[in-house]
Image 1: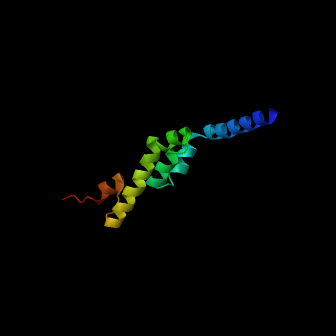
Image 2 (image 1 turned 90 degrees about the vertical axis):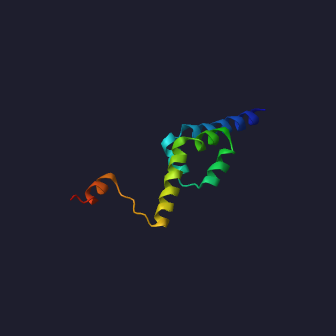
Image 3 (image 1 turned 45 degrees about the vertical axis):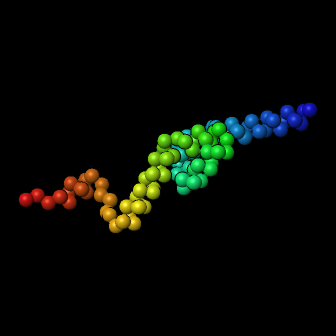
Length: 90
């Protein structure tokens, strides 16, 4: 019976280590996933569901996909300062 208690406590320790991760680290790790992988990850357990459904995870994915599509279309992405300096007056 004591062995069962040890196994249960080890499982709780593993789960708590995931919960102890700083949310920014989890979000950064999830930023490498595509949308299908992010959806699949959300179905593994409640902690991953919460992490995978975080707005920051989807925001990172959105920016990665949109920037790739923009570059594929041949558009140049300018920062606000570059945009101002590229406008010719007169």
